[in-house]
Image 1: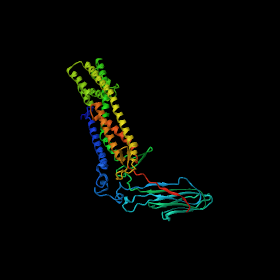
Image 2: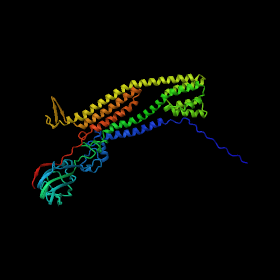
Image 3: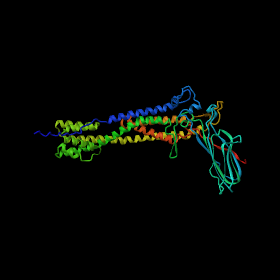
Length: 510
């Protein structure tokens, strides 16, 4: 009779596994370095540092395929996706409704692109849509039309219809394919009967020759985003200078700070664990029973490690090996120092309870001194943050108030006849300035200040410059938010103000 085969019993020991902390840190560093360098690349290729002889940044020449010494035409820009000029919409309405008339007209001027931009090439069509609302005293035939400077009605520029029985004109609308730049255009409303009240609205597509996502110096400013009343350009090339440093340093610093914080929480509970272990040992319990009993206690971040030691002891692993594996998992100098004392006492056959108490008191004293150091240093860290906040505030005020005031005071020509305007203050003449240039300098300044202040905060708190990168990252992020919400306004970053579609004279009778 064949004997029944015995089943094997497999016991999985929860022994120390390879620590993945450094692996995760290196992975975060690799990704951060890649993204950070990509941000720096985008910034530098759009900055003044890489402007080619054709006055285009390297980014523009690369994307559009322009040779460095070739000056692109308007037609060239229209064929490149990032330089294509998208139309803006300008609107004109009378300041107040027109009342009590049979015939009325108003002249207006139509803006357009500078001829120098197109270099004598055909300008894009400026589409115009006109609508009106007319109320007459009696049912009447009403004509709404738009005339060119030559006095002729524009193509598709006339609408004629009869008012309803209530004297109101419905669906009054004209759509003109192209309204070229010019003066003395006219809008007219003509009725057979008396018009009690009338209004109109002219809406036109306007081209300024400046690409939608570029400013008037071909610098990348990105698409506009409206957020809670703020007009933002989150992908503006200047942002990538600060974001490059933020991405490069902050993620790894933040991760390591979380690792350190977890370790500190374990170290804070470690003296309590050693003290309780000594008490159970003095009470006559074996080390295995003592650790297993403590595994049900509350030690915060240390609970998982105590439970693991309890399991290992129950599986027959020697106490000396268990505590050495525990020290290897935690990996801090404080824990390793205490475990080394306990291991030596255990091998020498000494009184382990006294060693446990001594190690507990020693660890508690070290953590107390560390806490005192942090509390004393925190005031200095606050001073560093306060000084950076004051510096950032002053820079924001200068950029938002002082620089625009100086830039707006340069209307007078200079005495030397070079045509450069300027404001004279005593014997000093302030020449024309470019606001974006100063904004750039200010932005670079606050970013470098953030790096320096953060590094100093890290040196004071832990003795390592690298530990201050979390402070630098938050300072840089604060600078990015302040500049984007306050400083990077359209007039300061070089966005051309839209011209007005406006009346050029009073009313007349056609």
